[in-house]
Image (cartoon, rainbow, N blue to C red):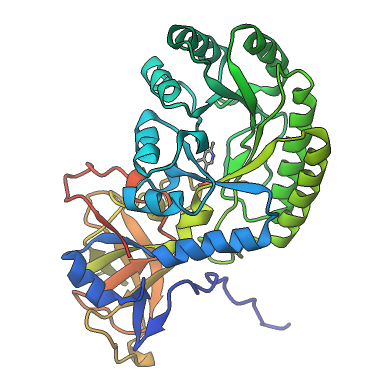
Length: 420
Ligand SMILES: *Cc1c(COP(=O)(O)O)cnc(C)c1O
């Protein structure tokens, strides 16, 4: 019997951050220098150039007629939103707070859309006053918007968010298909469109978002194809021409061992077919993709330092100064079923480590919180002996980091964030 076993899966190579003299560079700045500039750890750092390059990659690969939107919820840091606001065709917001950030970023209301269940009357009023496109998610929202429009003498710009009659396969987070709190079930949409036609709203189109964090091009293609077909069927009931068709996104990034980067070429090909067909059957409609994590996730790192090292019954623990209160997702508690390690690297605080194979060790990286959930790296390999003060860096941390974490839990200091 052959004893050859397949090697354990590894993380996809991280090519977005160069190294120089053994130091990681973020926005061209060596990590130790960046830490001095920021003043203290822990912090998030986002590489402006990596974000720019990501948008350029999409522009180069996708059909020119596809409009790219950034979904602010992935990372609402004002400097980052301002940077992306200049690169993409629009911003998608999901609360009045995000709406304020989009406007502050200097993006015109014409290019902002607002989705999300349970929009309160104040939020609807703010959105109508600003003149953004509202993705209506219920009959109640449509009626409330009609009242607001009548009071303002200005019809609200609306699209109907549709809960599709299919699911996005192998998606990290399903947000359409079956019963959902998002959108209006496809089968109820004709009745809603009827009502919209009668109550004086400015109908502009449809929004269909099937799910998030998908690494399979074939699944995304199928969802886009089905979304387009669904929109075509519903357009027959619409009170006016479709000016905007938001086909969602769901483009994923590789977080865990064994995951590969998403292939864009097959998606681009299908989108070209959809764009061609829309030119004939939905003339004048702009096709929109709304992406969050794909635009920013790989551009960000979370930087911590080792505060303590200890042995416990055969395991070496590195206790660092950051944890799940800043980075819930890396601890595995933000929608994961089984905890897996984000890519983690340990760098000596002053540059080079005298890495000798003999000193390589396996360590578990934990945060300072009094909960066993506060694990940032479970039994990871370190190419030398990690010392107190060394940097522990978590990659793929640009999306759903600080703003998606329970910052107040245990009353530690707030995390800093910099765009470099
Ligand atoms: C969260 C969300 C997005 C962004 O999802 P990503 O996985 O970050 O790309 C886009 N659209 C809607 C409606 C969302 O709720």
